[in-house]
Image (cartoon, rainbow, N blue to C red; front, top):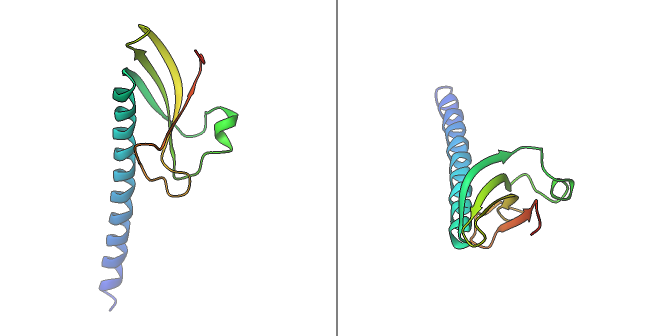
Length: 107
């Protein structure tokens, strides 16, 4: 029994790492899908761990992923910046409609 405990612990750690990696990979894919659907080309995307607007700070769960992005808007031919929150509030599920955008230029 003493040999199986460390192995079980290692398997649990590996599963947690894999689930975390998959969550962030799905977030990145959802971000790209959002950009493609809105005629935007992502120039820069930085995941935010705390430097977000106060309005998003208090309403973002630990399961959601927030990116600060710079995009090229194909329709208006200009570069815009935004905060993009991905994932559902309670579980962080990366669904197609689980994208919330706060534009910095609001225009």
